[in-house]
View 1 (cartoon, protein in one colour):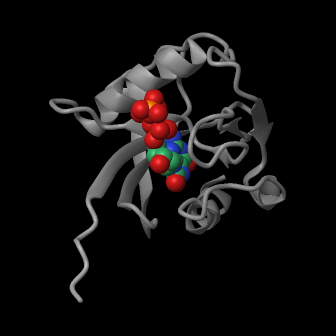
View 2: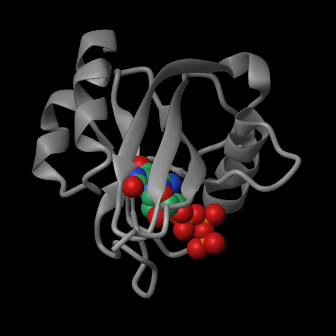
View 3: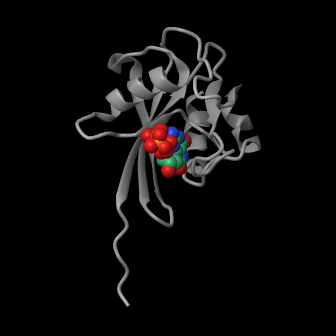
Length: 137
Ligand SMILES: Nc1nc2c([nH]c(=O)n2[C@H]2C[C@H](O)[C@@H](COP(=O)(O)OP(=O)(O)OP(=O)(O)O)O2)c(=O)[nH]1
């Protein structure tokens, strides 16, 4: 039997870094897929958007902060097969942003050191990204 090919889902995410080298993670709200897990802020790349534009939009919508393309540095990416789709997710690093992140969607927010991220359950696609943040910070 042949299987239907999985669609590739294109998501863009961002590691916001504070002056102490901690990274912001957000808890996925109830009702969404992977609810309760801690993730990097971000979301689906909409048609016509660059991944940088997606990150800038999602940071505004989810956290109420502003940044710009010049402040987003590519770090690495996730490529992970979930049951229903294959996730392709570039991860940017952002150290320069305006405003204080607020939980605009009622999500939990936490600033954590990359070496402590293992204490926060994250989606399976995210685990391979953590060593890159440990090396960077
Ligand atoms: N934002 C984000 N999504 C992640 C991470 N790891 C991971 O597997 N994902 C998955 C979960 C979702 O299947 C997908 C992101 O979609 P989403 O549902 O959060 O995106 P969105 O905000 O555009 O969604 P929605 O309002 O349409 O529900 O990527 C991560 O670290 N950050």
